Amino acid sequence: MQADRGFEELRTSRLRLRRSEPRDAERISAYRSDPEVRAHQGWERTDPDHVRGEIQEMLDRVPGQRGGWVQFTVETVEDEQLVGDVGLRVAEDEPGVVMVGYTMAPAAQGKGYATEAVGALVEYAFETLDAEVARAYADAANAPSVRVGEKVGLVVVERFDGHDEGVTWHGVRMERRRAPDPR
Ligand SMILES: CC(C)(COP(=O)(O)OP(=O)(O)OC[C@H]1O[C@@H](n2cnc3c(N)ncnc32)[C@H](O)[C@@H]1OP(=O)(O)O)[C@@H](O)C(=O)NCCC(=O)NCCS
Image (tube, rainbow, N blue to C red; front, side):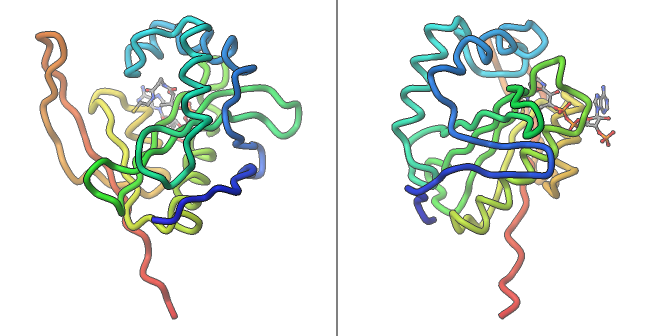
């Protein structure tokens, strides 16, 4: 894995991914507090102060270095609207594996933004961070999330039962392996 200290931004045809900054906290807090979004995310607190603190902590990390999530704010190129956030982290005991996560504001869902942003993030993980495997975990019942994984080339490699406060849920682990170097 290669650490990328010089990260500036990633671009797709419609989106820009930049490091999340404390000034994003209010907007990220707003959609992360939506019950539908919260239900699929691990953040226990989503109030602006807490989100600001999390962002500050993540901003101190370097993409490709072990030790926690690095988050990117997703904005439209055309009118600089903040539409969501994506993130990556190097898996704890598997240094060639990069995990990706994704969240889009409800008003921005269904436009292919998550697919576009996560696709760029996966390519970045392979090409710049030199990851061998890109991985995402999802609730099997979270059809849009599983679909986004599929659309960026991840395939379900494991199904498992998770337990959360006495409730059992069915999870999937989705992965894509870096294509072999043609040279
Ligand atoms: C998952 C999430 C990021 C997707 O964002 P998005 O920008 O709407 O995703 P896209 O538009 O790129 O693609 C969504 C895909 O799911 C499909 N989809 C949406 N609702 C669906 C449903 N109920 N059943 C089946 N497929 C569904 C869409 O049709 C689309 O696939 P298609 O292009 O083949 O038609 C967004 O729904 C979200 O933030 N959810 C809450 C947080 C979350 O679940 N994060 C992932 C945790 S692992």
